[in-house]
Amino acid sequence: MGTAVELAGPVGRVVSLVPSLTEALAAGAPGVLVGATRWCTHPPGLRVARVRGTKNPDRRAVAALRPDLVVANKEENRELDVRRLREAGIPVWVTVVETVPEALASLERLFTQALDRPVPDWLRAAERLWTGPPPRPRARVAVPIWRDPWMVVGSATFAGDLLARLGMENAFARDPGRYPRADPAELDRAGLDTIVLPDEPYPFAPGDGPEAFTRTPTALIEGRLLTWYGPSLVTARTELAARLGAGGAGG
Image (tube, rainbow, N blue to C red; front, side, top):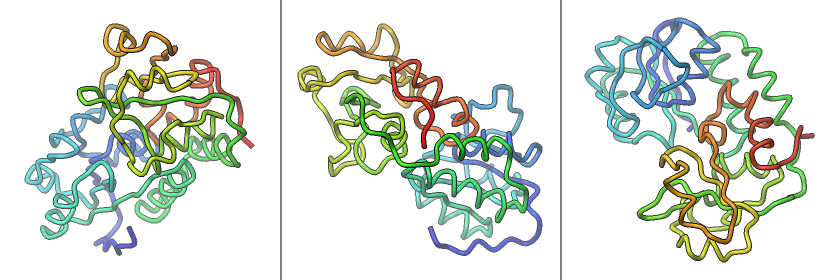
């Protein structure tokens, strides 16, 4: 965001308001996390204080944990919460992630600049896997992320860029909205190769989502592989390629 983050000293206590960053910090800086949201489900068994959700964090609970730093994200968290935490004297590091390269660079800055730690091995591995221009598209897809109303991945999103790097053309990549509404009946007639149904933020499941489409094949996937930027990037390419029939290594 370009905002200077003043730190009183070494960062030893962090509260994360972003599931992706929670997993990344747990894997790359063990012991530094003291708080996270209830949506921070990875790594499983993470034992830290929970400070409610990404859109409604309990700011008093955050302050009570005496964090040296709070990490947030422009898309996932509210500007109001970031401002109020800063007004309370708590440093907040806000990430902006709309592409895979942005995610990798942002994570490297978080570890090296904010935490003064080395770049984790898993982050270097992810950089090797995802660096390079996207391949030529091999399939055309749409990715609903909500229903009632139905909404899909649009332009300027991490998920859309990741799909492109798998050789998948997002049918809504040029839509002016980041998450535009879409009629499922129209999606079913749009000449798509696959309708990709992740299990988050809406929990699409075998009995909840695929039944809306009778012409176009659907693929249920783990949403974390498509929308989280962290250790999951090391396995996401292989797992999504297997599920969606996408390309292999980038380059």
